[in-house]
Each structure stands twice: as structure tokens, then as C-alpha cells.
Image: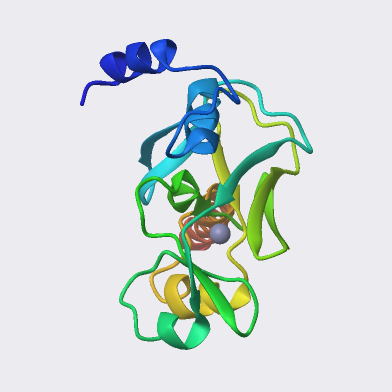
Length: 181
Ligand SMILES: [Zn+2]
């Protein structure tokens, strides 16, 4: 459905606390339009549309609460372990937080409060910036490490290393050409 028609529909919807059925909280969150789903370096990502200030609530990682045992049998990567017993299956598209990618230098963090996963900004996030949080060492080692991390911090680090290697190679070849003379 085109975004515009959705926006129009939302404008007609009753305001907060208007006793609307369904998912008032998610509607409220989307209507603020603080972020959008867009193309990122690794698939889709969530991007700020407005300034999100440090400490601001961003979203809940929402979905059905299943046992961690059940989660182990599911073939989805959109799982978030609440504790050793419970996991949130966040694979529904309504869960915008599932679009948030991993970063080794994130601008958001997750916190578990009473079986709810809260995502909060830990830096000011400028419009256009991708929203990221650190997925943690277990996820990193299991799913990211092998193909290499493509977060901004790692890409910058790799670029700096390539530049240093180029400079070193240039020095070596200069030395060699000097010897030849
Ligand atoms: Zn990284």
C-alpha cells in the first residue's frame, strides 16, 4: 500500500486514548514518524527521520513471548532472548525494531524491563542516520563473524587498514626503486 494513503488514513484515526481497538500503541508510534525502513549496507535498516535525542525511547522489540526452548526450534533470526527461559519472536513486520541492524559502535541500546525489550537512544541520532544497537557477542560470533561485520565502525576500520597497507606498500616499493638506482 502506498505510504501516502496510509498516512491519510491515520490522520482520520482517533487520537491517543480514543478507545481505538487493535494496536493503538503501534499506530501512535508510527504516526510520529521518527524513523523509516530503508536500504542499509546489509539488507534493510531503520533510519531516523527526525532528531532522536540521547535517552529517547525508540521502540519496543515486540512479538509473541515464547519459551527459549521453542525458540531453538524456530528458523527465524528475529529472536530476542529475554532471559534463559523466555524469548520474543519478533519476526512480525509490525515489529519495526526487527529492522534495526547490529553495530559495533551503536547509537542505541536494548534493555529488558518486565519481559519487554526497550530500545533507547544512547546518542543523539540525526535525521538520515541509521539506528543500530550491539547484538552482543553470542550473536556476533554465531552470525556475523564469518562473513565479516559490515557496520559503519568496521567498514571505517577496514578502510583505514587498507589505506595503511597501501602506504606501507608504497614505502616498500620506493625503497626498492631506490636500491635499484
Ligand atoms: Zn562491526
